[in-house]
Each structure stands twice: as C-alpha cells, then as structure tokens.
Amino acid sequence: MAIALTAFAVDIATPPGVAVGVFPYFLVVLLTAWMPWRLSPLVALLGCSALTLIGYAMIEGVPGPIILINRLFIIFAMAIMTFLVMLRNKADRALADQRAGLEHLVVERTAELSERNAALEREIESRQRSCAALEVRERQFSRLVEFAPTPVLILSRDAEKIIYANPEARRVLELDPSDFGQRELTDYLVKPEEALQIRDALQENPGTTHTAFTFSLVDGNPMEATILHAPVEFRG
Image (tube, rainbow, N blue to C red):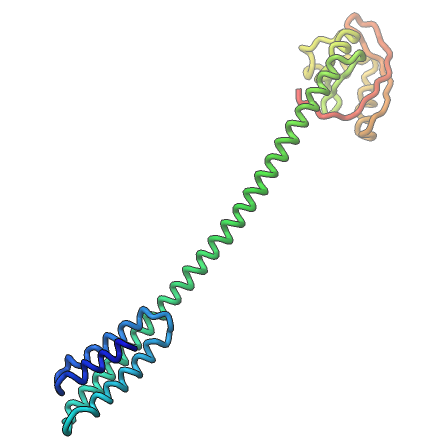
C-alpha cells in the first residue's frame, strides 16, 4: 500500500506527458509476484489503474487526448504484467504442491521400506534362532545316537540302502562303514523280501512301528531281530 501511494505521489509530482511518472505503478504490480496472497496482483492492478486515472484527473488545465491514451496504454500494459505474474505464481504453487507431494511420497515409501526391512530383520533373526536351535538338537540327537547302547540304523529315503550305523550297530551286525550308501539293504538280509516289508512299513505307517527281520552277518550266520523304526531327517 505504501509503495502504491509513493508511486501515486511520484505521478502527481511529475509534469504531464513525462512517462517516467507512471513507471512506479509497474513496480507495484511486479512486487506482488512475491506476495503469498494469490489475488495480490489483481488487487494491485485495480488499485494502480484507479490511481493512474485519478492522476490524469488531477492534471491542471485540460490534458490532451494523447495523455489519456498513454495512461490507458499503461493500464493495458499493467494488465498484461498482472496476467504474467499470476501465471508465474500459479506455476510456482503447482511446483510447490508437486514437490510437497513428492516429499510426502518419499516419506511414505521410506517408512514402508523401513517397516519391511525391520520385518525382514526380525524374520532373519527368527530363522537364525531356529537354525541354531535345530543345530543344537541335531548335535544332541547325533550324540544320543552315537553313544546309544542299542544298535541304530538309518536307511535311505527309499529304504534300499543303509547310510549310517552307530558304533553299537556296527559292532553287533559287523558292518563296514565304507559300504554305507553303496550296498543294497538286501545284501545284509537272509531273506531279501524283508527289505520290501521294511520299506512298505515306513511308507504305510510314517510313525513308529516294529518289523522283524533276519540279518546276515559277515561270517554268514543269521541274526534274528525285531527293529523299531521311524522316519528321520539325516544330514550326514
């Protein structure tokens, strides 16, 4: 407001016909480009246009038509400047809104990624604890089997080969560890069809069950036994 009044004072003090007197009005309109209120350029245009016409009316004597035309041209030029300023302000607001939207999107995505990373870390920690607990149980099971006072045999998935025998089983059944996983189970049995009975029992009853068979020792002597077998996961 103070700048507009100053421009009006300069206009009044400037002799008629001198264009420099109305230039401060352009400065008033131009400064509205940095004002937060979006209608500031339009208000400045209306105010400066009114002051321009008032300044024309306050000229002493009878001003010529050229002066009026000049002032109308000034008003038209200020209108064009106002339009450009409002376009600029609109573009700035759109850019600011877009930047704010992008910043908000970045914050959301960052929070989402942080949450996913935290969930992934928790899952990894949980799996690591599970793996560690499983390794402990496997070591305990291995020690239990290794030092068991009774023979323990572990067969392949198809129940066709012996892949492990604890020391007691190797002693009682006279097994050679170098044959594990190589020789068929039927090679150790007096009656080969008993191997099929063992396999069928494991497939039909995944739980613990009993099976009788006759084992053939290295010296050819038979050994009758009843085994208690159940499916286990063996990793060597």
